[in-house]
Length: 99
Image (cartoon, rainbow, N blue to C red; front, side, top):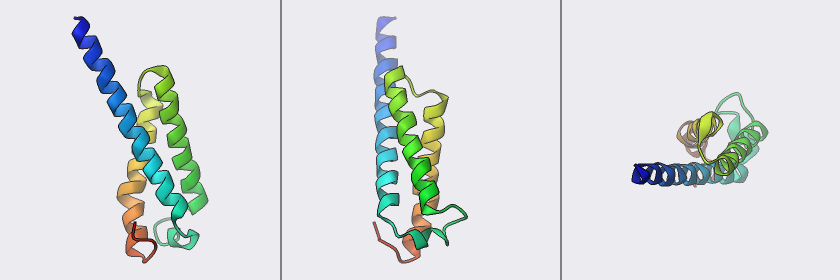
């Protein structure tokens, strides 16, 4: 039974690390974009997306201290994925930085 707990522990660490990496990439991408490119991507401005993505990074960091992803970490993961999979392609197609 002890091996099952260590598998769960290490898989949670890997999941948290992936969530943290996604949050950092999304935040870095958002910070490097022009503010006017966000108007065609949706109703939220660059400042709002920066605040949301910084919050996702904070929620992920709190998950590292608590030993698990938790509901707030899952919300942070969803927000980072929405930015990377929905907003980023719209900004890229609009002629901003191709990164």
